[in-house]
Image (cartoon, rainbow, N blue to C red):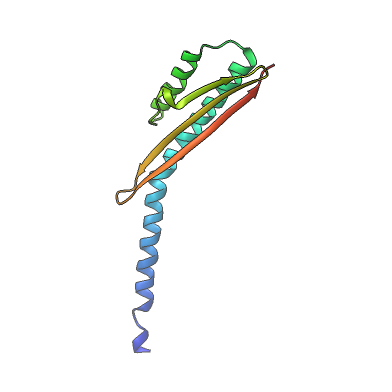
Length: 120
């Protein structure tokens, strides 16, 4: 019995360390993921509006999406947005990368999204 004392305490500290690391990673990554989802929802909404109405200015559309990205704290430049028009389809391609600093590691998320809507 004497040789077993303390074994549970070391395991407890290891689990506390793992949980603290998980909370830290979530604290750094969840807000970035939420911002990216908001940006993609906005881009999808703008694409849908442009497809349905047929009235849009390409420069204004790109400017609005870049401005929204900057409001959300995401790095995005107009060169990362491409617009394709076909007779029945309006497509917006958004290719960007977001970096999350985890102090010991820089985590890069790459996104390559296509928002496509049928013209009415």
